[in-house]
Amino acid sequence: MTAGHAEQQGSDADPAVSDADPTFTQIDCSTVIADVWLLLDNECDPGARSRLQGHLDRCPSCLERYGIEKDLKALISRKCGGDHAPEGLRDRLTLEIRKTVIVAEQRFSDGG
Image (tube, rainbow, N blue to C red; front, side, top):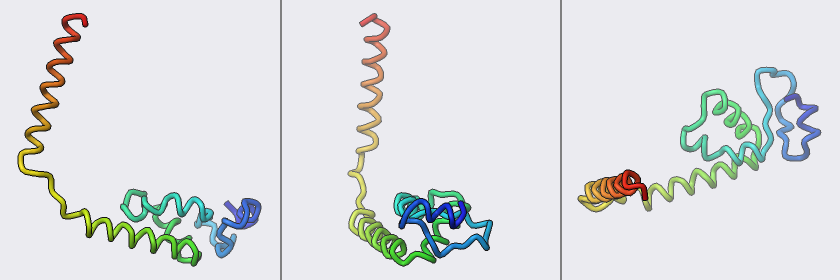
C-alpha cells in the first residue's frame, strides 16, 4: 500500500511511513488494534510481526493501546496463570468422554 492510498483510507492510516521504504507494507490503525493480541501471543509470522511493530513504533496512539493490552494480558496471567485443575479431573473427563462415545456408538449401531 502506498502513502497516497493510505490517505484515501481515512485518518486511521499511518502517515509516518513514506513511499521511500517500499519493503514496508503500510497498515492502518484499525488493523493493528485488531491484530495486537496476535502480536502479544506470538501468533503471527515474522513479516506480520515486523509490520505491526513498525506501525507501533511510528504511531503513539496505537502504541498506547498496545501497552494497555499488554498490561491487561500480564494482569490476567498474574491473577489466573497459576490456577491448576483439581487432581484427577483429567482422568474423570477422559472417562466421561469415553462413556459418551460408547453410548453414541451403541445408539448409532442400534439404528437409533
